[in-house]
Image (cartoon, rainbow, N blue to C red; front, top):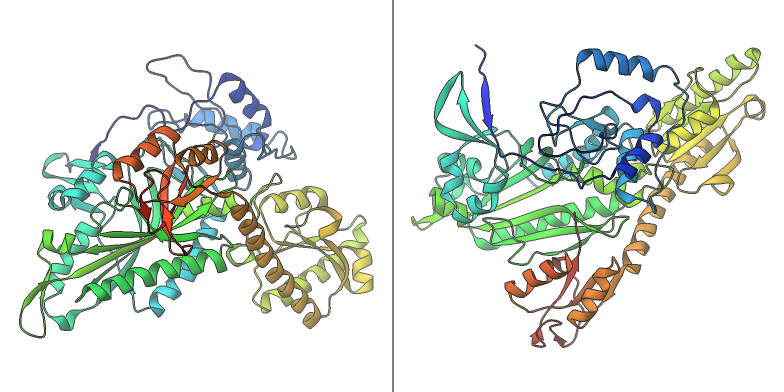
Length: 566
């Protein structure tokens, strides 16, 4: 039986910031031919310039604004006319947003979905997400969590049970009102997060203290009807993991919330090479329905903050709303104490914006889908077999050693084109093998993070143990170098401030402002209204000594970090 669903969703006006005619034309000129597609667009209320091509544009197409099949076929035919056209990327310093979209398009990380505000994650982009999954799955299981799955559709009455939760999520909800051609008795929410559904099920599974702790995780998609979107960073639908736990005591729940934010912190530093600042959210920024939210905040290449992962101590807010109780050792009925925690595909966007450069993507080796690319080089046909045999042998050596390696042995492209292509895709190491290298039993190795001749080393032995050791050592060096570079950039762009005027100056310069804070929620909202910056967190690492609030002049126990953010 086929069930049809009718979605009644809020209308959208603009999902990205507007693009001027000049910018749009400029983006079209930079667009490589293979990325150009014909699309028909309808504009309801005002005349706008023709939109730039997919992913180089600053807005998604709506569901009704998809191209016809004839246009797609014609576009594909045109893309084959000039397959060797250079892939041009906007310089980061010129236009960071255009650079970001260019990298996503050219590195083949994602494309636009037919529904306005959605994206299709392409294999190379999904492989980065898989690297994130593989690491975290191991850590989750090591810390006692089991994977499972909860339904995507949630009764609207569940959302209404926790007052602050429904208030916080109501503007972002997508609702199903018709199923099977009939009006539903109760509208359903397309999962924005799963605390309510989890609690409904926990109430049925938890009866005694012997059932605790209950610790689960799920890898799923969620839907939040965002009004301003950015690929990977903020889309209507995205992928994430969300962990949910129930405990007998508040101390156990707090320990769990802290444990998981520490797991995220370790992943950010050791795998993604992103030097996040870990801390506690303010009351204003705390997750809807949580008692406390912990966060990891990352500085992007344009110095905006990205909330890269969160862990929430939910207290008993949801267990009281859903009557999730257990009988303790003394025979008394108690409400459970809970946590939830999540990282999403926005981390992929964070990796792009932290490490990328004007040449394109730059991936830390531990999350790179391809760690080494091998480029065989020959001019004469009688050299081809020997070069390809050597390249295949090098590939086998590295694969056996556990290195993710790609042999690009296609002969439709020049070696120079391949150099640029794989550099743009962020592959950490490139190995070049030509006839002279075969004769000498050596290879040439280039580092992605060190451009030009400085990053190129000649005469590296093909002998298996020597080559394996050299490659692994260089991958470790690149991983450390990227973290060191990102840490230096972060620290040089954080300004210590002691007054509101100093904070405003720092924010106007695009910096992060760090200063003592004990002011009210109203004062915090005033900062946001007047500067565009939000209180990102109260860092766990705090300076010693007496402090005076930068806003009120009253004593303050902690410093806070303010920044503009995604």
